[in-house]
Image (cartoon, rainbow, N blue to C red):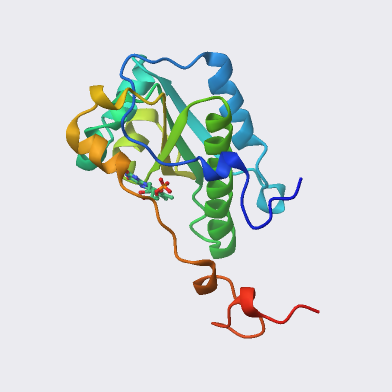
Length: 197
Ligand SMILES: Cc1cc2nc3c(=O)[nH]c(=O)nc-3n(C[C@H](O)[C@H](O)[C@H](O)COP(=O)(O)O)c2cc1C
């Protein structure tokens, strides 16, 4: 299928929302499918460094994960139906392996976000959590480090959401124009105005 400069509706429709329905649940099947989407992400050198700590609302793992949230996220993320802590290899002595262990997390999280959206959930990645608290709480070994906390939730009726959360969710989403980020011939020369053979 040709998209003519547009992107797939799953990508176009994705956003990091905060106004989640505090009563919505996610089934174990759906959650497993999101985890599998992460598991099947590309991985540098087939190392597969990514690990997940998974909580569904009201279970002990979920409660433990909410206790790691920093102030900005504590106001909305506990309304998630599930929280997934995404960890990767620590690799303290190998800069290349450490770098690509982090790239692998990004790819896994991206696939998980799209899978969650395909299933009708919103997904919101967070760096705003206390990694040390998570390490202690879940006995994460020295060879792993938590990098991203992913909230999965069902969008609430905006009328039921606190005003400050609703206003943030309604802000227009923007990105730098393609001309400023994609180059050809030389750095800074827009790909879109390069001559076409
Ligand atoms: C690595 C990473 C960390 C993020 N951490 C947080 C966070 O702690 N809290 C939060 O509300 N959003 C967080 N976000 C979400 C971004 O704020 C969001 O992606 C950005 O504002 C663009 O909005 P969009 O995802 O709706 O396009 C994070 C995103 C990424 C990729």
